[in-house]
Image 1 (cartoon, rainbow, N blue to C red):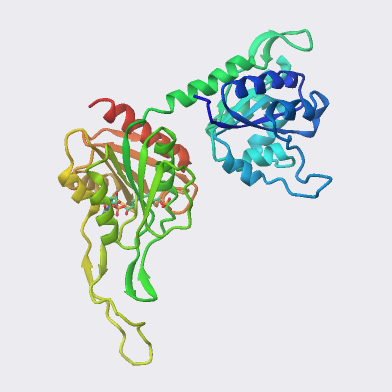
Image 2 (image 1 turned 180 degrees about the vertical axis):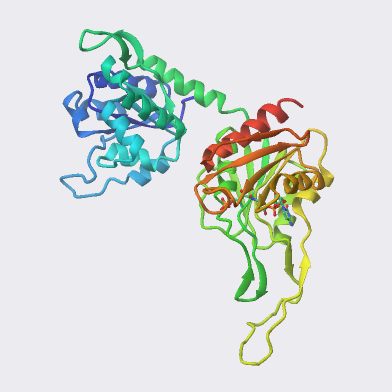
Length: 403
Ligand code: PMT
């Protein structure tokens, strides 16, 4: 599963850094492309020359390359990688990652990372047991990072206990297992709608809403990362999708979104309707810019847009999974359940504007999944990428694999 994967190996300053050379060898042998990013103190334990000879790439360690003055872009590295592994991860780097102290190339790369991050701690047993280290590892876990627990054994101090960096073979296996289990949507096709719709008033004005597209794009990326072919029908947003398995169809109005979604749905195994679709469009759209020179105040006549989710719900065939969202401001559960029924959804994802850090624009969301059986699954506030994972887990485990 690692063949062709792009892996950033972050190495920090601990004695286990000598094992990084073996780790690089194993990744390369498995067909992965490896880019090493080292902290300055890691170079005290293993030389960049060794690592660049093994990876075939210059090691990145400083923000600027001294002899050319060129800038090493942590943002580009964050976009390039399929995974980042920090091995060994010292208590100091773990603390910096937990609190966002971006004072070296490794932590800035970590903070820019779009791909999954694996952390293999290595330190003496008392440091490992310290409440501060435990708390920081809990924080990394809560950010969605994967902690590769250190092994128990003899440490560099000759004490015996938990703190040895996991063996390179097991670190490679952890990534291999991760990428294998992540292909649970291989061979499946998923339709996702995202973003707002714009309903034209005249050639320069529209009725729209605050949707940024972040929630829908996270779902599309999660499905693609798990092996699905994804059709992403997006309203006007300023986001980019980096996975080539995502075919993006850009639309502006609800009518265009309806056409695109209806055209794709029959070939899909699942559809997630995350877009914030305008319920009304302008019946008396002006063909020229409306002027304010007259005393008359223009009147905008609205007419109902067709409900995209309900249209798909009416044609849903046995085995297809249809998921909707409900964005509410009051009477949340009752409104969401009514939408679930009206649109013939398998489940609906409720988010409320009364919850801080939920709904539009923010990078986090707080959702409650309501199934057609009436069962409710509340989730904590999380980054939208992890909310997407929760939703896709439910689609895969409770619906697609059930049918
Ligand atoms: O894009 P972000 O900034 O990340 O914000 C995410 C979000 C808040 C937009 C998202 O989490 C969300 O809640 N999306 C649905 C918003 C919405 O319009 O909900 P609704 O309750 O009005 O619609 C219910 C469902 O019917 C939705 O699945 C919607 O896509 C669908 N619908 C609505 C109207 C319509 N004409 N056609 C539809 O398909």
